[in-house]
Length: 534
Image (cartoon, rainbow, N blue to C red):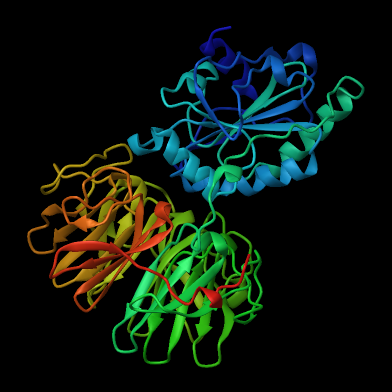
């Protein structure tokens, strides 16, 4: 069956919204029916393409080998926040139907960097995915199934026929219902023996840090703070790496308390308020903003309750404020500003009143300058300030943009669109980045973690010219001078004196840039006896 005919037949089962790189757009498709269609109304699902690389399994998988199981195909790309939001739903479905359901991740990359199997492997580890994933780098699966957007889910019954497809996030309830219906329909005809997969996590060596997110340093107190994201905790060290404190039990949860009992869930962003000796942390997968009192050694929740905010994005106070995958935070005067990746906005929080509300961006995803309440952003993931403006890494449009606070206007330094990316120095519109995640201001330059190019670039604020500053531009883990140093998806950055600290996320390390010597080294952590075993 041709992919065009298959797509036409299943389109009547699709939901009325789909997400193109996170951009929600209306379609003419009908809503998913309340009950699964009868078998005679279903169409055979196309066979899986041959000769593709599989991960989280020791051998390629065919659709025929999954006869007797309900199969759910998840078309995703690991940059996409909507795809990331779908992963918890998939985990819940796998737990609900451990014997009946097999989820297959179909990774159809948006960015060039995401086509590499090793980078997909790191994403599998980072998001703790425990089902097979196929590298659909040339969109063979995508075309065979008539997919148009990320994420898209395709449900296949135990006889190998397509039940329907749904695009966008937030389909847990209808999928749970349909899988349950299929399990009843095929009762006595299903293979209920669970399949054990050869997961990538079994091949990974232990490391002290696991996908560190953001970092901030304080020269006066000589301390460094960084999020150990996948260990669900925060480190405090000296500037030379001596561990002083570990904040968080390491258990996934949203629990306030002292350093040993508090629980977080993949924290990312972090900022330091030296006037009150406080840390503010974007607790990303808890969709919350947390506060760490460094004097009393306690963690409390400022905004959020563990539930993800939806559309349209609205503000709220304290636990009633609903963020969506907040990725970074910065303080300017008496306000906190959050890169709220999940709603494609910047948010503002008043720490004393705990009031949170959108500050810039409508919630639609794209690149559009103008008044801050009319501008379009695209998954902002890093934020910094020069004391006047807010600069942010707008990752899905491979851009660095800023909010002129006095004028209330969003402007773009570098970036052109959702599918305009690359590795080109220069000025707009020629210059290109590839999915940057971090920014840091220093001495009239904006330094950029050009994440998918594995480089650190910098932008002259006056001329708006971007240039490669550090990095050979290939994935690796190598110290040395600025031209030969190698990173693996760098993320957060912080200047302390004449040094720049970088979270080298996929290398599970903190890198140290000596600006005078123009060298890159890896921070050596000491005092490991203070780190609890997880």
